[in-house]
Image (cartoon, rainbow, N blue to C red):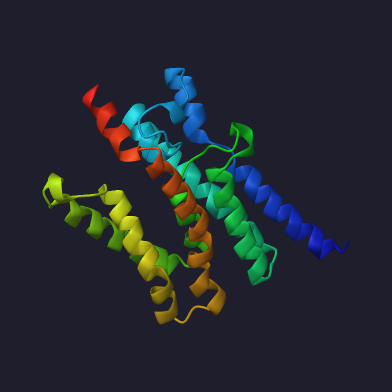
Length: 211
């Protein structure tokens, strides 16, 4: 097997293993002595840590999860990996976060890790998308609670996911970057569907009532 191929395989495997390190799980275990997947929404991610442990810890988890997506991509760019390897590396990092080998394949939903993937590849688009996401979230909060079927973060992510390819096309990005959000969004959609089937929103509401 050629050295280049081994590097590509090693990078993809390393991205998955790094993605599998769940800071949400370990921080909650340390602070609460409990499994984050059994508390709040049941999602091993930053938002649930904010709800269960505290805002500052949730922010720390979010930063770590972003780095899990960004670092493998930075390595891939430094090694001048081809587009298909960068795409597979991104998928591996997000899949590791969603289905971590260290936690019986039950992890988070990959939103922050997706942000980490997009940031080094398309920093301009990532900045604009973050502004759009905050704008959508702020607007969504202005609606009465009874007409909101999903939390602001869900609505923001849906809008960002929809416009990201068009924004990349507008700025003249190569075709693999225009289509990359569509590929890397697949494990996130699958994971969110699983969480919804497990009553994510109902669990959050019930947990908040007990606080």
